[in-house]
Length: 246
Image 1 (cartoon, rainbow, N blue to C red):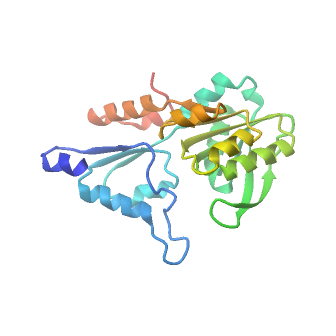
Image 2 (cartoon, rainbow, N blue to C red):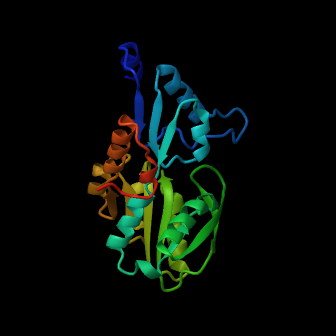
Image 3 (cartoon, helix red, strand yellow):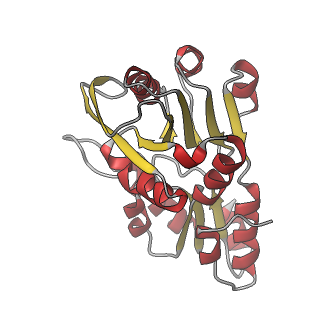
């Protein structure tokens, strides 16, 4: 489609990709492994894209894989809005990262809510398997909100919920930007000690919500729509990094 637009003399082609494919393959973490995120970036550029709009890249350095402008939007404003509207005791909650890599994301949300944060350190045996978890922070008798950018088989997020419950959390919620939910994910969510698992609609979730009543959805279409409008009119999109358009 990008190339079709380009050869039809489009003056500018903007690719809107809410969930960037192969974002987890952003580095060579073992011998002979591909850096697929870089390959996708090359393919988009060669096809003729002039601008990329995406949301919550798994690794922000992926923006550097492109020689064209990339707007990496954040679901954070929509997440903050959901927390304030749906969690009664949010002022005393604890925002938790299920791994050390998400600490920056979690501290940003915690600072904007003016609440405490915690993180869980994990050591993996192999992909999609968690070896051990250590909680850093106090969640006793408080609502804990796990925040991550994406979940695939949901092993990490569900084990983290169990860890928080064992540590004395009164309620546990999970909020994700990208819900892939492959393999045993739905069954794990059903069995996990989660009040709700909240995910945005960067990936369609209608079927998953039908299969699991714990899953709730945050609509981020207005954020993407406003980014498209601002890009088309030559306006700044930085406003969207901290606000949800009405």
